[in-house]
Amino acid sequence: MKEYTVGSLFAGVGGICLGFQNAKTKNACYKLLWANEIDAYACATYRKNFKHKLLEGDIKLVLHPELASNDEEKSYYESLNEIILKEPIDILNGGFPCQAFSIAGEQKGFKDERGNLFLNIIDLIEMLENKFYKPRVLFLENVKNLQAHDNGRTYKVIKRKLEDCGYKIFEKVLNTMDYSDLPQNRERIYIIGLSNEKDIELFNIFDEDVLANISKHKTSEEKIREIKKVINYDLTKENAEKYYYTKEKYPNYFVSVDEFENSKKENRINLDEQINEKYQFYQCRRGMYVRKNKSGVCPTLTANMGTGGHNVPLIKVKDGIRKLTPTETFKLQGFPVGNGYELPEEFNGKKYPDSQLYKQAGNAVSVPVITTLSEEILEILEKNDNNENYKNNGIEE
Image (cartoon, rainbow, N blue to C red; front, top):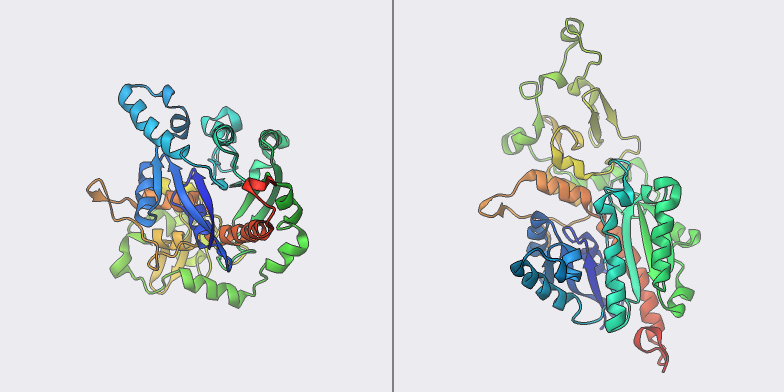
């Protein structure tokens, strides 16, 4: 099969990588060469599931080892620099950090150091172009709010910088529940950059008629079938007690009418009363009210799930109320946990914390959406490369 090489920045636990790895046509596929991630916990999850090189560390130092703080660190990053610039890649992908732009965060944009991490993508493109040639395709993902941040100015800067590198940029906000079988309401912007005119001519993935053909309009019954595939309704208080909400653990979330009348509380919460439908997802917001997701699917999973509180969605099960388990949150992102993808159980000799798994799931991408888009791109690349005059990244000889 024809293989197109892929490098992945800000890889997290490998959602984009897995999406590309799953994408295939009859005669072509992707080959993952390397991935970069700085978070040690995410790296442990990634290594458990992928065999190619993982460059663990700060991407800025990977690209610029001379900025390291000491000789040992410099030597380490020089070795990673050799790997990342060892050979050209056809596709560069990355879900660059979104917290700086998210409505769930403080929306500081480029004033936030995480927002500036985008510039490392530009750096790498230029380095690869100077040594070999620039990647033929860029594939980036971020929060929907990236387009609206700072009245649209932030995205204009991002798009202009990518265009200055020689790419035609296409972008579209897609909702996971509309373009996959996953029951999660998750809107994300997908940014695709193409450097070759022949690829650009064939690109129509974001056209409304094309999207209409791949979109999914689901009935309530179909949504329930999807929910059953990712939620384990066989769990009970006996084997999953720590995920359950009870009056003993959370008395303020099971307040009776009499208790409320004798208290000074402004709002009464009683999860047994308010979380009353199976196959639905609920959120307890700031300890003030309980809300059912109006779409009939899981609300957007966020990294805040790993910070404690009551940020993990809640569900009604046969023996009470519980929050989603880490495994369920990964499955809601399309990771086939237990069927080719595994969650780590230990980290540095200690039990792997649920908080990190929740954070990773919230930061991840929806794998099937990535597979759909990357497969469409693969068909374009393959079609153009079947032209015998097509050579070396679009240069005719």
